[in-house]
Amino acid sequence: MRQNEERLSAPEWHDHDLVFPNRVGRPTDHNNLYYREFKPLLKKAGLWDQGFTFHSLRHTFATALFERRQHPKIVQSLLGHASITQTMDTYSHLVEGIGGDVVDGLDEAFG
Image (tube, rainbow, N blue to C red; front, side, top):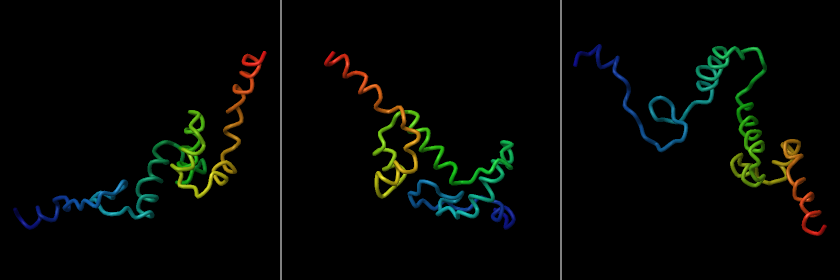
């Protein structure tokens, strides 16, 4: 292999068993992820000026879980919140309808 070809070949993959590695398997640098990947993706999607942040993805994920009626303890665990209070203080507005059908069923059970 010529010297120029060696410089053009892809670097060796470093497997560190990471969930979100960079392109060569090492830990992802948050600045690179944000400015080289996330911002261009927003621009391509036409969402550049809509105020989306990387943290918006986390809220979208949590909202989707609650819309699928996942138990709040599961959401807490997936988000890594230290307590269910933190999760419910942030997302309780999304669970308004949860549990209403339980009380309605009491009429049938005791009616």
